[in-house]
Image (cartoon, rainbow, N blue to C red; front, side):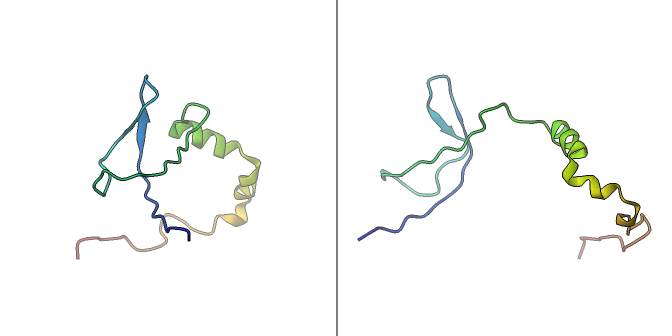
Length: 84
């Protein structure tokens, strides 16, 4: 019989000793056996400017240069007021 597992997502840092240090405590008490899946980027993380630069030059978004895509203006819509 397979046991059901619950997944949570946390962030952390791998230190110089190759040990994982979580940014926040786990939401359950131990001791408890867990399985860990580590996702990491093989390259350094991209800055927001690098993402914007790449997106602006990506041919997948070239259709946005078509004037018929400009269907909104600065005067469209109503201001949002979150003070209710």
